[in-house]
Image (cartoon, rainbow, N blue to C red; front, side):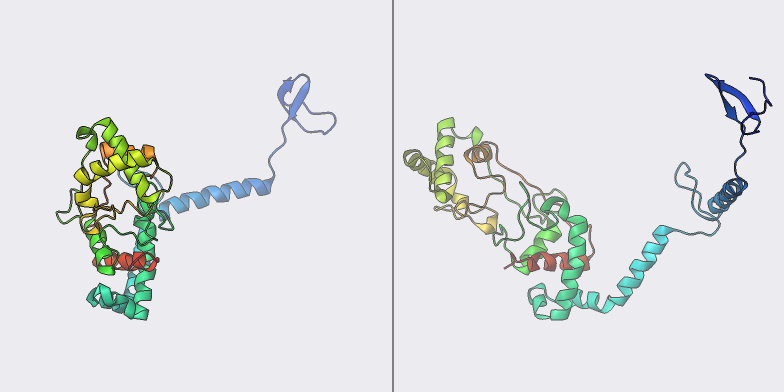
Length: 287
């Protein structure tokens, strides 16, 4: 196991290491490989000097060239906005209700609004705007506060039941678990089921109709068709935001629901608010 021993088979000097009689040859690395390694090290040093590279406490080294991906993206955005400046100005000057009449401007607004929607709204409403439990489907014609272009714009701008905007859409259903007896809740749930489902307990639903008339009709209407002006949903169309089975309805009646949508007016530019409103309206559910 002495160093410098020459292997009899290959004629190569060994390192002196041996494992179960197998000795390690001291074979030098290929010269091309070494030069490649040295060049990579030199390139790495030059790169870290020229470009942002090393993380610091509150940022990273800037690099002597001053190159920045953020600056490049900002420049591209500025260039893009300058190309569409005339359309953006026209969008700001156009009444939302007549926007669809201008084909080119509406096309621009919908395309821009689609990008805004995917970046800010799809997390809740889904990439296809079909919604999810607790998040409205934007593809149908059921709009609590109206589905006209101007109505959608107002909702986007001010949001729903948030504490940041004094003009937010607002409605609140009482938690009837604190106001009604258990059998009354069971009865009124059965009545609500009867409004959109052919299978129900007629006797229980009849008893629930009285509870409904006394406690629910003021908002949802005598026939349960709702009142979009005050954000009271239609209970007879089988479209349910939190589920329409008896368990889900019982939970709703007992504890109420209180979904919140942020006010996008302070977060988006005026053009983006208008554009995303046009996009949502174009999906097919807008009126």
